[in-house]
Each structure stands twice: as structure tokens, then as C-alpha cells.
Image (tube, rainbow, N blue to C red):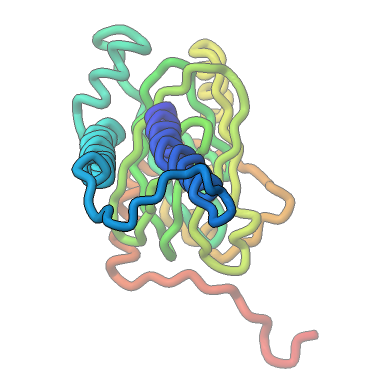
Length: 272
């Protein structure tokens, strides 16, 4: 999807340059050609209309708007994560027919990221690991306020809404480390609300999954309520959890709909 975003961004810039550059050149030419001191330019005081100029002035903008409208229409559907053809196309092109996508639940708090791998029963905080060439489907929600899921090199920006479900899809083609962050201001810890995305081989992903499943940290809804307390992650700390509750994602949504609020614990009166 990031490749599609890049293609349409380049197209938009190219179209705008195709309008601005010729207009600037023609304007400069006319200013020089018909300046007061140039007595060699033809001057016709009775001129009032030109069909050729009318055609150019109206045809170019209309054709430009029509082309951009068509490309915008195509682009909207090309990056629509809710289109089931997106998964099928990415699966067929990246890993072969029948290859199942990896599901990851993304839960944002103030101001951390929790990535839950439901099938593997594990979770990581502030660190995302995915296998190369495998379609990854993200199901996202927020426990607090609106955030934006954004990995510029891999996936376009998608809003994450409290108490709601949103979705994103990506296929990473290259092994490497990529920066992800929230692109929506969400309070005091927003500047440190980032996460590393590691794209690894399928074998290494399996090994990593097995190592996380041995983590002594577990994650159920009670543990999540502690994790979700406002935390400014200045040091970029990451955590790994095993035995993650199977319906944690749904419990978080239900909690928000029931009015659950995560507040910072205040020191008792008189405490230093």
C-alpha cells in the first residue's frame, strides 16, 4: 500500500509541475515579448477574441481534473484495506495462492503500542515483528484517544479510534527495520509514541514467536489495565508477553464503550 501511495503522490506532483512549469514559462515569455520597450512585437488594438486560446484555457484544466479524478478513484480502491481482493492479490503476488495472512491486533494507549498476535497467543509492546512476504492484517483500536498508525516505508496512515475497529493491510518485501509512529497528536507523551518494525525471514519469525511464548510476562485484561496507565516511553522500552488472553482486543473495546478511563495515579496528600 505504501508503494501505491508513493505512485499516486508522484503522479500528483508530476501533474502539478506539468501545469505550473509551462504556465511560468509562457507568462515570462509574454512579459518579455510584449513589454512596452519592445517595438518589434505586433500590436492589434482591435483584437478581442481567440478560439484557440479559449480552447487551450478551458480544455487543459478540464482534462487535468478529469484525469486526477479518475486516478483518485482508482487510488481510493487500490489502498482500501477493507477490500477482500487486497488480501487475495497480495497473497497471490507475495507468497503464492493459499498462503494465510498473519493477523495482528493493534491497541494504543497513552502513550504506548501493544501488538497482539492472537493465533500465537503473544504480544509485544512498542515493537512489531512481521515476516517478509506474508500479508499482514492489522485490526486496530484505541483504549484512550484517537491515534494514527503509520509506517511510512510500509503502510499508509490509518486512524485508530477509541472503542471502534479499523483495519490496515501490508506486505513487506524487504528484510529490515522500519520506523513506525503515531501521526496524530495525542497528548504529553506523543513525541515518544513510536515503535520499531522488524521485517524478518519466515524462519526467524517462527523462532522469534517461540521465544516470546516463553516470556514470564503474561497479559490478560487485568494486566492490560495496568499497562494502559499513561506512560511516557522516553527510553523506548519494549516488552514481550506470553499467554495473552484470546479476546483481549474485544475486552478493550467493551471497556471503552463502558466508559473505562485510564488515569495517572496521584501521590497521596502530604506525600513529598
